[in-house]
Amino acid sequence: MSNAPGKLSPWAIFAFVLSIGLCPVVTIAAIPAGLWALRDVRVHGRRGRRLAMVAIAISAVVTPLVVTAGWWWNKHVREPLMAGPAAVIAQGQGGDLRAFLEGTGGGGTESEAEHFLHRLSASFGEIRSTRLADEPEADAQREQDATGWWIWVPYEAMFDRGAASINTRFLISDPQRGWVTSFDRLIVEMPDGGTLHWPAAIEGDGR
Figure 1 (cartoon, rainbow, N blue to C red):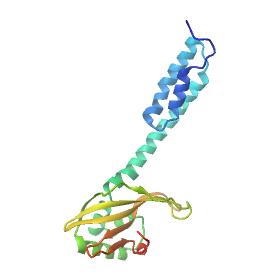
Figure 2 (cartoon, rainbow, N blue to C red):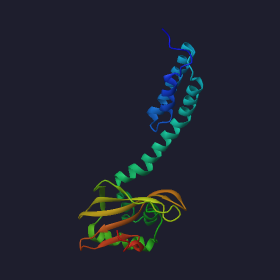
Figure 3 (cartoon, rainbow, N blue to C red):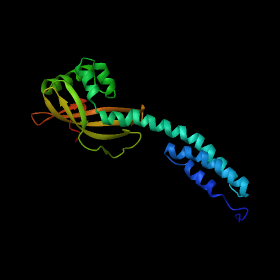
Figure 4 (cartoon, rainbow, N blue to C red):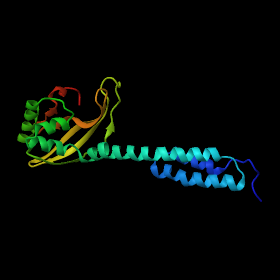
């Protein structure tokens, strides 16, 4: 026995729910679900044709957007956070001060960078690697027109002459520059119990 005519197709509802998901595997599934809903409407005389077509259209738009956003986040946020600031510090220690400044958000001058890197090298030698010391914890978001969005992330860094703890601020967005994604602040625990800050102006900021 067929269902009563005029009943809304469950496939149309299912397709629409899938189309507004945040996972591309889910959103792309809305297309075959929507096509099946159209068949269900045609064969069984149910309602939901427009809803199924909307679901297919949303899926076609949302899926590439979600894929692109996921790729960007992985490339510019997740991978740098997992790797840590070792590469940019190594560039600076190798003499490329401009790359160090650009890699840390452009704060400070070349002479300040040279002083910071000299003290770092004198205490620990050349950097070899960094690894996450703990799970990154999201810092409180400030006013959008003030300082942007960032998280503080602790790392254990390996140098030629031993290990050091480096607390970093990973800047994700800046009101003036938009999406930045760089380690714009570094705080290194020194062997004498003090701390070495980059840029020097952040010393005493409570971190």
